[in-house]
Length: 234
Ligand code: G
Ligand code: G
Ligand code: MN
Ligand code: NA
Image 1 (cartoon, rainbow, N blue to C red):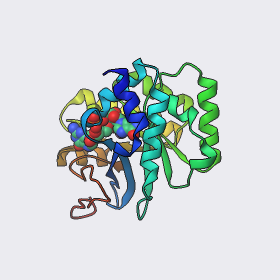
Image 2 (image 1 turned 135 degrees about the horizontal axis):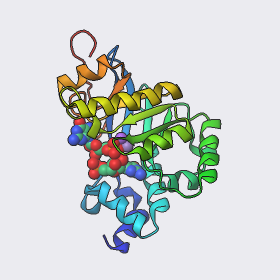
Image 3 (image 1 turned 90 degrees about the vertical axis):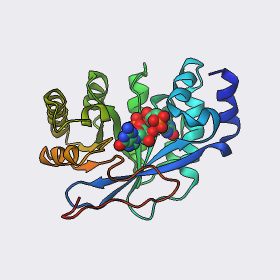
Image 4 (image 1 turned 30 degrees about the vertical axis):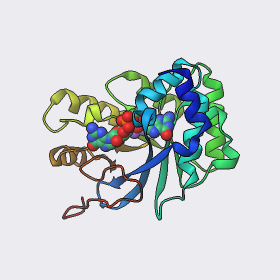
């Protein structure tokens, strides 16, 4: 993307739309909360590409801040947490004292940040002001799992590349079990992302995963969407 495309988003944050996807307790079927996900027209239609380009242009912190403020511009959900994606660059820039909340979860999306001291300092400020921390996208790659070991998060989000087919592929199941062992050691609770099939849901429950998210349980919606609760809990 062109630098001006990203600058246009930063200058017109009113164009940013926020969708909310539910996260559900896999034992009780009750709501954990919602993840705020960026949406919109034009370049905002593909947030993945937008954030990658912003990083390349050195605008990640500014874009992140604009999106974070857009996500918090609406109200908190009627119950549970509101989980907002933030990169390390944004986390350091945003004033924790002004925006931390006991119902806010900072979903740390990327760890590619050189100044670890500054990052851990920022994380303690968010924590000190009452927010929780989640490490996002823990997957087959060791990077985010290592981040979890360093940063001692309250929650770890397991990437959908490990969730997909975890009921039938032994490799995913083994990697998942490994990641869970690290989470248990850390005392972090686990949220599995991208659950699409009942078999995946069952396998995750059997492994003792606390929370889940995915199209099977609820899609991202412009408001507080309905959660699919199946017979016998989830
Ligand atoms: O919707 P899509 O699958 O294109 O999302 C791609 C990526 O965009 C995801 O990895 C998600 O974490 C990221 N993303 C979505 N909303 C936000 C946001 O508000 N801030 C940041 N930093 N990343 C976001
Ligand atoms: O990287 P991150 O986990 O933040 O990515 C969030 C993205 O994943 C959003 O764009 C969201 O729409 C998408 N997503 C959420 N649930 C599912 C799912 O069950 N399957 C797939 N393929 N994508 C999902
Ligand atoms: Mn995320
Ligand atoms: Na996520």
